[in-house]
Length: 201
Image (cartoon, rainbow, N blue to C red):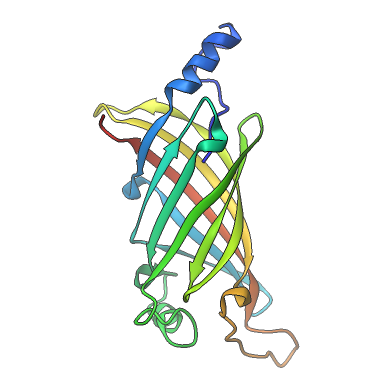
């Protein structure tokens, strides 16, 4: 997945020096789940937004700073770890009305394409699998930078967002409102805040 674009050196340095720095970020990375968030937002009762996240997930990134299109990403999410701040709502989401977590315990994403859009902006397309159904999803990304933390870990970070229609994955449960409309929106907004650590050579 291509997340290279922000200059990690002084603006006065030559383009060749900057390119060398970007190429230096090439490598294999593991998502640091303790400092990352996979979240979502759904419209509730047509009047407010309910936000949630997944607490248990893992993922890896293969980054190519010289040729970003060769980069890739893989994420696995434990659906039983869904957290919306309400135990009753979480239980409903895990049930047969929604994610059927007993039968389909994992949601996966596997990238198929990466694009540089200019500046710090990138786009990644991949296959999202929920309830055994696989559909393509496009995620817009913003590169947040690269740094070495106090423990010697080489980190990269980015934020991402996407929108999906849950009905395309068979998530069709709903309830009609007396005033018109439905209880849960079909459109779901996905948001990501990711920190990843370069793997040891």
